[in-house]
Amino acid sequence: MKIGLVCPYPWDVPGGVQGHVRDLAEALIELGHDVSVLAPVDDEDEAAASLPAYVVPAGRTIPIPYNGSVARLLFGVVSAARVRRWLREGDFDVLHVHEPAAPSLSLLACWLATGAIVATMHTSNPKSRTLSLLVPAVQPAYEKIRGRIAVSEAARRTMVEHLGGDAVLIPNGVAVDRFAGAQPLDGWPGPGGAIGFLGRMDEPRKGLIVLLRAFARLAEDRPELRLLVAGPGDGDEIAEVLPKQLRGRVHVLGQVDEADKPGVMVSVDVFIAPNLGKESFGIVLLEAMASGTPVLASDIEAFRRVLDEGRAGALFPVGDATALAEAAAALLDDPSRRKQLAEDALVAVRRYDWTSVAKQIVRVYETVTVDGRGVREAPVVKDELMADVDADGFDA
Amino acid sequence: MGIAIVVGAVIVGGLVAMYLSWTAGRLDRLHNRTDAAWASLDAQLVRRAALAAEIAHAAAERGLIKPDDCDRLAAAAQHSLESGRDDRAANENALGHALRGVLDRPAIDALTNDPRLQPLVEALEAAMTKVVMSRRFHATAVEDTVALRGGRAVRWLRLAGSAPFPAYFDIDDTPVPVVTSPVARPR
Image (cartoon, rainbow over all chains, first blue to last red; front, side):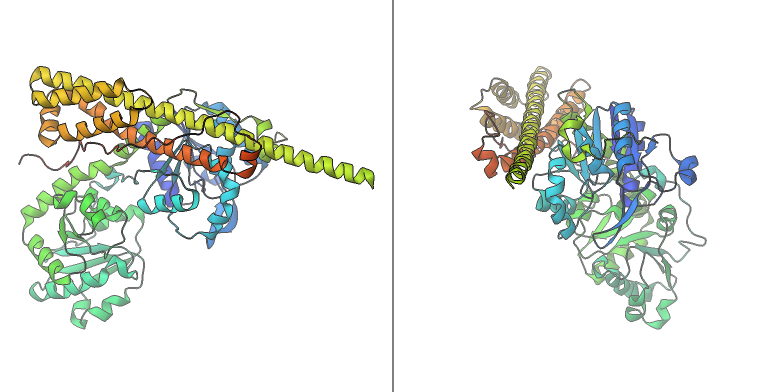
């Protein structure tokens, strides 16, 4: 299949949507599809050398305030011309735009194309006033989208509230192989054992407090046990909950890069996700599972599903520090059970690998391309809104 | 003065005409999208029924599923394939019900352990998923079309022409969980 993907945010700036588009493009190429990604690139000279062959730069972005932060979006005559040329030359069977809610390259592509168009919604922002204001302007372009995908239940709900209609839920994938074979940090987990946490420290629903209370119990019987904490936040909670003599056994790493995550995860004997709820999807669990670290997690619905009803990782009652301490102790004392959980987790996490996710997305493509007519450029005369923008050939 | 009024009227008239023709274009596109979505949903439903029939016959031949169950599935698939416009939804519902009833865990295991049936079960799983997807896309297309057709200008000026009012296709399309647990394997 010839697939055209549109990324609304600059390729050379790291971000969740960009990462999603990159991983999807690479998984689709691996499955034997012909993929081209149209994306803004802020510094073409700088990025030229590192740009993958499948990326076609669409020009620079213009920063504008959006949703309370600055979004780097892209507009203008040059981009319209580039989008048209990309559509012509690509001759795609399906056009897949990402995050078309923002006034962006993705929306522009919807405007300028007609035929088999699919869109993925990433944002979960239940009360976006900007989005509500933009609905009348984007509605006509939205009406061309034949199939909508949402990456989470929250993203789906946001879309339904603002635009109506419905979407198919296909979660983000995990690049399982990127997590395999990581090296632990120096001296970790150590002979006395170690447990770990990764997530925002200052966000109560991530449940660090529960883990700290459990650690205080565990530490009494295990003089060498250590706790590794990674993620944004200052870790004030640690001093509040733990007695002084235990604080030295908690190592706070702060925020870690994507590339360092696997190493952090394999540095502990048990990875703990003490979240208190409202988690739509346990991406951090999937990453721990992919790294081969046994997982102990709160028994919330999303985690239970990811952990295959407890077969691919242990569960404990939400918010219960005593139960957490007991479950962690049992795992720390039973290396063969840990090994078994880690092995089963590696099997279970394959379902969430990008290859499996890309196969689901291809099924969406197949349902919108039944007419076999592919994607064409929208006739210029019919698009009065864009007609004046596209009058001159500004092709660089 | 007179000329100014005429010019003004011409400009306003031109803008109104542009808006109306643009809206008519939108409507036309939405009707096309709804038709395409229905064609896709129809194709996935036919595929699901054809695979269900093939699996029922092959499983009966090889004695993989109880004969009664095979007959039930084959009959439901046949009804679905022979449906007319009026009994389509009821027959598709009955097929979905038969699939969920017959293809329980032991039946799926028996089928997927047979090298001839295994690819058919996989294809059925894909078809069931695509029924869910295409039905959702069809419902969204119908919703968008109905929303635009509800507008006053569209109703009063009959911009939709003779295009029939689109209808939802409501069935229970809950698929059979073919892959339940990747970890549940003999130890």
